[in-house]
Amino acid sequence: PANPLTPHPPAWLAEGAPHLWLPYTQMQTTPMALPVVKTDGARLTLADGRELVDGISSWWTAAHGYNHPHIRTAVTAQLEKMPHVMLGGLAHEPACRLATRLSEKLPGDLGHVFFSESGSVSVEIAMKIAVQYWINKGVRGRTRFVSFKGGYHGDTLATMSVCDPDEGMHTLFKGAIAEQFICELPTDAEKEAALDAFLAAHAHEVAAVVTEPLVQGAGGMRFHDAATLKVLRALCDKHDMLLILDEIFTGFGRTGSMFACEQAGIVPDIVTLSKALTGGTMALAATIARAPIFEAFLGDDAGRALMHGPTYTGNPLACAAANASLDLFEREPRLEQVAAISAQLSRELEPARDIPGVKDVRVKGAIGAIELERMGDLNLMKRRFVEEGVWIRPFGNIVYTTPPLVTGEEDLARLTSAMLKITAETT
Ligand code: PLP
Image (tube, rainbow, N blue to C red; front, side, top):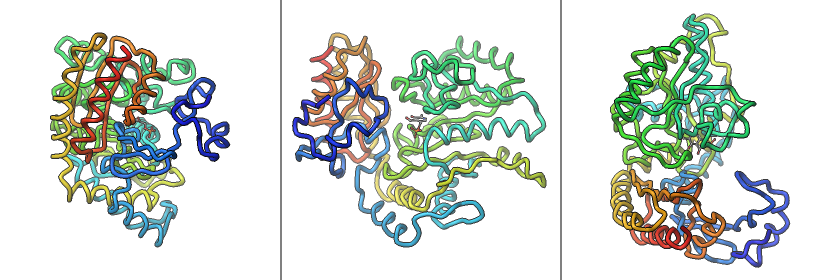
């Protein structure tokens, strides 16, 4: 259907929209997507010239805002030299430098980096590494995973199996995906004891525990504290299970530290990164393993190797973008900006508690969420946000913002005031 917000869509949209199958979209009833023609800083420009303040950083990726000149220059230079080359049997500087720098920035001996192109696939690779780790060590039967209610790790068949099966987006596929153990996060002593007992009973068949550290994002912007992560690390050690932390959303400053696991002072056995890895410019993901995990794949036997190899693994353009993004984290005061955004979000979203129908208001790092008792008319809400000049996409019963980490005070105030106003209007 036509979109009342763009009564005169450009020809390329009018012609292309019937052929473009959009993600998470009911194509029959959802209004035509908005035509965006330019991005700059924390702004999106629509075809008719209107500017929107971006409140979600294009699915949480654009950490430095859009079109940062340093990333653009790095990618352009790499494009001149070598846009792509296979990583099988060949290597190149952008991938080597990025692997080295990620290893140096991550805690402990997380030092073995496997590149892929999407978050979901990086989690699948982590799951494959975990299963094969046990096989390579001569332990049979440890092929299953423990993950948590409210969790989200991707849309592929394997990653769907470790998402929350009831509240996530994947309920339909229950019969088609492997059945894993979905437990409650050990956020208090009682839940810790329950998880401890569960892991003890299933240790012989579990390869790894998988979770998002500190924030479960797509499952509803649910927060837990660092102590919960410490408990998970201790339980995995106790029951000799691998701990996979999915930092695809939380990595690169979003929760206030470069990586969320730093706040708990723990080192996972495997960590996954994507989204802001390239500062929101290119598709790239990484699965990074600790030394003992990597070493289990070494030996004279070719069968011990990791049999996985995405065609575009370690794409030089994407690695150049990621290296440039890391330069920016080193040179510019990103984490201080996150702290300032966090304080402003706390201050400005707090009054939402008084709006009837609001269940909770919470802020962690550069994430601000208003949880509703139940979502009203979602399409109306989305439309109203655009009319207010901001790009905010509520989901489930959550109205949230994850702005670029460079968002200025005024733009952020526009986001928070629109969140309050439209929440009040539509609940
Ligand atoms: N894991 C987490 C924590 C995510 O938030 C997401 C995406 O939202 C994914 C995995 C999947 O990443 P991708 O969409 O790049 O496949």
